[in-house]
Image (cartoon, rainbow, N blue to C red):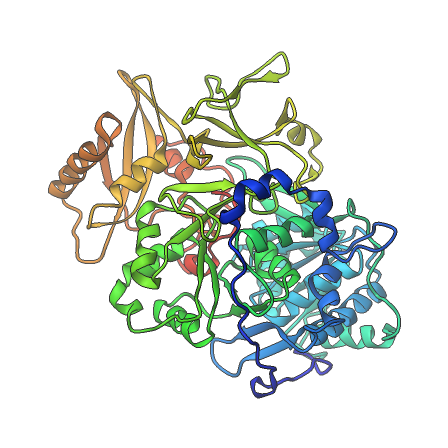
Length: 617
């Protein structure tokens, strides 16, 4: 941190009494769905008399003015070295300075400010300072290569970038001339003498903020609920990344879902493993949990199973939000390692980022003494839409039930797997377990309000009063939602529609299998056959005999929809948020263009620590 940062030691922190669990939502789920409204929920926030609200104020300032002022807001765990903490009062003061500094730099309302940083205090202060200044915050994943960084800075017309020296010199400086809107680059880890030419050290930025800051003045911009606040890029299968724009009132959905789905309340010690460079790391690593008054734990180290278990134990984590990829990596280390630790404070384990395989749900009982609860949402939805709520009987493989205030349906499909729109109308399927495109009725506060500079694409995401998610699902008789697959991933074989997730989950029940990616391979007779790419656990060899065994195993579990071909692959392509890239597997199998590769994990990336990223199952 810079000279103006408050250097608090761990020994000074105020002890937090654990707050007993509230009545679980599921006990009153049907009543809550009938009586909940977003308009009434707005009274839970600190909206001013004119109706203005600001994300950063809701997340931090209102707590800093009350009984949580001296409670630790964020605890930064370093790879090596002492822990650093900021209370809510300190976080308010530091983010006030950052907001004042950005204003003095010339940042105006709606200007885009980006970060390209690891998990460090300056990133969190930039998020909150940008929002307080009325700017639009846009995270960039620190493991991106130069081209994805340049492309997003250009598409977002970013005016300010906060990054470190190495990231700047390797990924930004060579392209600076191609970024005419990028006026200011702030370097967090260099002083005046060490900063590259044309950049500003973080210490000078904060000194400018201190000169412009008056403690008795409110630095928070008078933003309206509909003012843009966040810009999240999400990759498409081809073409440029999509920039989803979210507004300040999204904080209401972050807050409500953090309470309902993650079971957060003051007194909790909460750990979300998602990198802040992705939407989950912003919505549920920063804004949502802080709005609930919890202590957020963030770890700068790469994934290590023993380290993760020690954090859960020693930090007395109460709520743990991670991704199936991370859980599978913990599973590979074996349950015996988990039993070396104890987790008496842990009460809720939650998953995000991709469908949660049933065996991971059950494994939670073995490792933590409780099942893992899945959640489903997308970058475009901005917040959790479907969840296995605390106290809810978990049905392994199901995403759960809709969040109160969110209406979901499945729509009849056309030949391409997407919702069939006839004369501007869609057909809502009302029978239990009918498969169709999952759709949401607009009206929740965190719904994206635009694709940046692409109104036509935004219009295509809606039909007949529904937002079309592009995911296929079914809803059972009790209202549980079951993920089938992306509409463009679904395999059409001999008249059957086969969801790849179902096949992947079945194969993962085999003791030799660590991970699976499934695609449809063209076949002259069946149209497509199912082909599975399998990563094996340590100690198993990729032999023809094992391939035959897996095909037989699949047939026993799945019948005619089982894989007909098995390929072994110890390095399946993942997004940096941890999802197996089926479309890339298919492109490589068929020799097709690979499309946008900016979010593909590189071998040096640690997927488990960065998982839960793009927020879409």
